[in-house]
Amino acid sequence: MTGYDTAGQIQNVYASAASEFGADPEFWVRYFSPSPAANLFSDDPSSEALGAWDSGGAYVSCICAPDQSRLSGSSAEGQADAQSMASSIQSSLSAVSQLSVPSQLWCWLDQEASTSLSLDYWNGWASYIASYNLDSNGTYPMHPGLYCDPASAYPNCSTISQASGTAAPVAVWSSEPEPCSGFTAPSWNPDSCSSVATKLWQYGEQGACGYSADVDLDTGVPGAAFSSYCLRVTSAP
Image 1 (cartoon, rainbow, N blue to C red):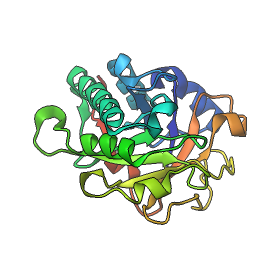
Image 2: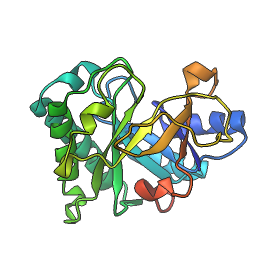
Image 3: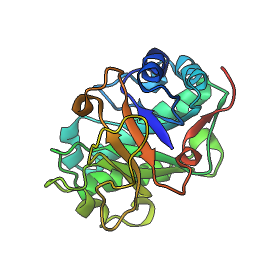
């Protein structure tokens, strides 16, 4: 299944993406706080949810992209950023009754290729995400995952391989390689960590591939429905 991730608001980018690629996405990945370089889904969740519905891809995965210097920091910094993300997701759910939470909601931490990730930060971030009582339903559906370039020289796979308990990552979202094959995803071949399964692949990044629409292209691992781990827009808000 092919979807889009974007730092823009869904309602502002889906029409140009559909025009460029000639197809509707099956899911979106959108930014939640803290993500200082992106527009936040939680800033206008009703319009974003309606945009997802209108685009034909009524599933929204959640990522946060803190200031990258924080990722090499302390457990307290990781926990603070996770608190911000959880609050951002919760406020969106409170504002839009048509957003449904799956039994597992994968939540991504954005680690760029030139950034180091410390075990202290990861443990603080991931443990808080996994322990958050989202929507006060007592099911604790949020699960931590890492967006990264597994081949980077900076610690990423080696860091999360040491995590255990509630901090253990559920999946990796790989940013490389980028064959730029358009909307039709290539054969599954992302760079991978040895200890944590890669479940999502950003195979076409806007800047690297020269796309005009403000989206990157992603595909989930074959044989699994990535949308099952996303917020679902059940009807038009």
